[in-house]
Image 1 (tube, one colour):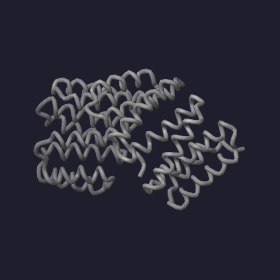
Image 2 (tube, rainbow, N blue to C red):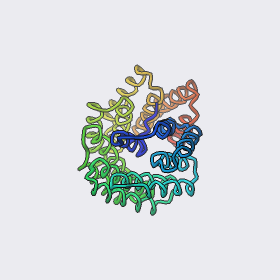
Image 3 (cartoon, rainbow, N blue to C red):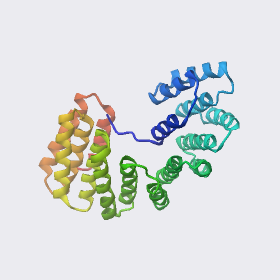
Image 4 (cartoon, helix red, strand yellow):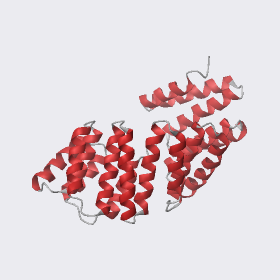
Length: 301
């Protein structure tokens, strides 16, 4: 299973931990949304709103679903209706946050940032550090996706001050590491990825640990520390193989191929790329195969 840590999953965890009452259909709508079953989510939202047109939670889920289906106009209509039914700063925080997601999904980044800033303001009024953190990450992600890396870094660093546990610290450190990496500040990228690695080793899921290990290997290579890169990647390839994590075994293999090529061992690099491709073929993972091609197309002449 690929790591897909998004603001959507962060939102869901926080939302259901803070909502005290929600209709059955609205709850089911959100669950269907999280499972990627947007057709069912849409049906459940409509059912809930048919019973109660002022079901704010159903409007929220309807807005999220429209956004996932690429219908920004309908998403904003639903979310504006939900905003009108928001009674306090906490409710307004959630609406602004989801509105930010909708704009970002539609690549309207200025509007997304404005919405995330509003969610940050409302979260402050609601005294919710958890949602302040998520709002900062939303702002950072919008800047990151538009390649405004210094601004993204500023938001990610601010978010770390609001991390509530080692898992959140691991997530934040990875955001910072990747941003430094893309700014070609590889020593700092490595520093933060090492921190992320230890946080995920201690408190993360197997997916998070595998992902952080591969990125650590990648960043070791960027600093030309090929010995540490190979050691880290070989360990995670073995771990993924033993745990049945085919995606990470393949990803670790092609990243190790990059390290081998950088150190001049083209024969091993070629064998590792072939291994990764075989895993993609055996698991019928076309997306993984495309990823391998993209990452290794200029590796072996």
